[in-house]
Length: 326
Image (tube, rainbow, N blue to C red; front, side, top):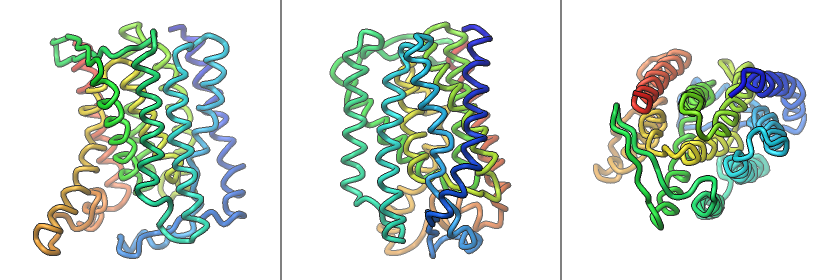
């Protein structure tokens, strides 16, 4: 992977995202595309009501433009499935966000419609990869010196669909604090890129990761505390889909269990909270779920929660890199 190509990918995506912020945020304000906050959530979040949402477009626009340029110029000819999956999940999130804004409440798409739309995108991506000459159904299993491969055959499609649906929902749940989701995603994309650059295979994933890293840096200028804009489901579903798609396209989907451990914990905390609440007749396992809100209600400042969760994700990504590269 040539240094000049890295620079040509990174800097334009960063610049476009930095330009997108001042252009898009005032537009969202004029359209009154404001966030609705949970009344039963942390009281400190009520002041965020009205903050523009659908800000995921700030990082998605440079990623989509950059991805198309890389594909049509032949620099990253295998970038298309990950790019299309990201766009597909972004469209579902965008529709969900628009319905929330129109209805002026937290209810967007009905759950079954939302999951149905996500399922269609996930199945299309899984089938594309499974029957593609560039990828196929073989996955790599790496564990600190153990390196083997396994052909999942017909099990590949349902496995990939489950992975993508799980990641989109987990990342969506993680998007609850200023800068949390974007920062954690940045570290995972960084790890993916470093792994494929070291191995010299699936370099399209590295280019895709670089696009996202640059665009997310630009987005965090506007999303870090106190956030001037939120990514909305448009951004969080796209991020979850992109992370899952990258892991699949690099042939190492299981690495997400380690690198994306924070997202897994966030999703599990929400599931456990619901199950415990039903089992005990109204008692709560956490003060609030997902778990980042639990720490807030324990007295942690929002920025402290974000920095600790960033550090945890970075540590998981370092462990993931060693897991694969030793």
